[in-house]
Image (cartoon, rainbow, N blue to C red; front, top):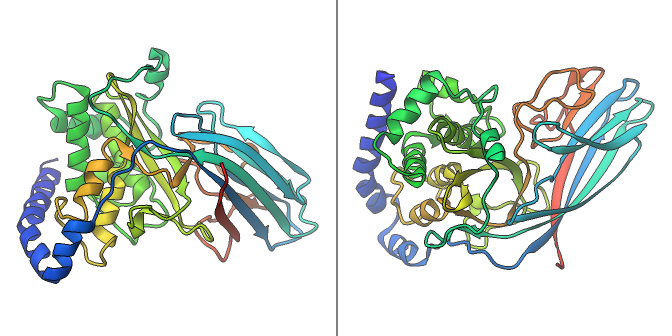
Length: 375
């Protein structure tokens, strides 16, 4: 643990030391001044946006039975309405299945192999921006039994050992749940970083991250670590696994998706439950993404003018150009022969009992797109 602490302190020192040089040398002075004046990221609750999401699967192999599972939006909240699902295809069976613990829904289809498997799924949702009014208490509160559910460990998110030890160190001296979450959020931003070489959204093995001191990852790793540390500190928290649907209204390239092709737009976010405010939006992983990728140069100062508005807004809010599929961990797909999934936000498939890699477009051909609809 001592080595990990040294690593964190070293990164923190480097971040602060590098900030002045980064601001003056990376950007020309005129461009930097313009960026200071113009960059803005401030989602606010407002009108609902309607989207249709289409997932098309086309497995080329024939002569061997196949199975396909497509995640469906199954979240009903003040920020998302999951409206409908329709599907067509040549499967011998096709129907909705539900994870018994988390309520995550997905379309399960089986194919006899007589012809290439073809499946199209259309889901309609409504989303909207979120922002917490820190001066106004929540009108509704969750039931204690429900909150206990979001304080439990998962296979990739143990809450004992090094996870608990790290959480206690971070929140030592904090007196309220908001203070605890703020400390963990800031720690995540300072100690972790976006690693573009990680496949997909990462694995989310938070114990391994802490034990090795390797804090590079993607949203499944970084927001997973955030959620795990919050739970270990006694604050109910959950990952929301979903996909970006449209460009950001605030001009941040890395915080939006291309509706015509969303195959690599999967993104998980996080929520914490605060006693005065209910479920509150969080996304420290996207702060790290902006730092690493938004300008083409790795920004190592979280107070940089490109990063600061995102860092502030994503503590308590997020933009509604994104849809959640579910909050599920350790998912056992109906009919699957290959074990549990750490999370479900990618289409899955098996041919002849062997799982296809959803991150390998040559082996597993599918496409996801979205379009805006009139509300």
